[in-house]
Amino acid sequence: HLIFYYCTTIIMFYGQIIRPGKSVAYVPHSDQLNVHISQASLSQKAKNGSRVSLLFKQGEDEEPVIICTLVAGSQDTVSLDIFLSQYGEFSIEGSEAVHLSGYYSPPNPFFEKADDDEEGDEFGEDDEDEDEDEDEDE
Image (cartoon, rainbow, N blue to C red):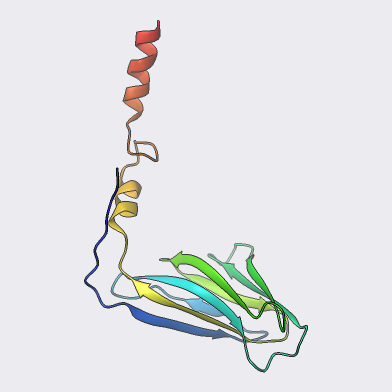
């Protein structure tokens, strides 16, 4: 099945600068919009050869995970495809600032439907169908 999602909402820009030694919180937008992070870039002032890792963690007790590593002069920009809908914190390891850019988007109803269907599998099928197939095999 193909599902097409048509959006008439105006998409808004998202931008954030993560500086060394400081974490930056992502707080979900009040209009229930997701944020799509599409790019991480080093500052133009970054010293050639310096390495910076962008990290993200979802909860206070969680260990941060590395999203990407940037190297000034060879990999100044990385394309990302990350949707956020819950609180989290960005930080960096390194001595240069990282610029994040992306946009806010409305929630995708396809994914909301999948979250609501707790009894079905990832394709929306019920576990009951499996039980019927097992009975027929006996």
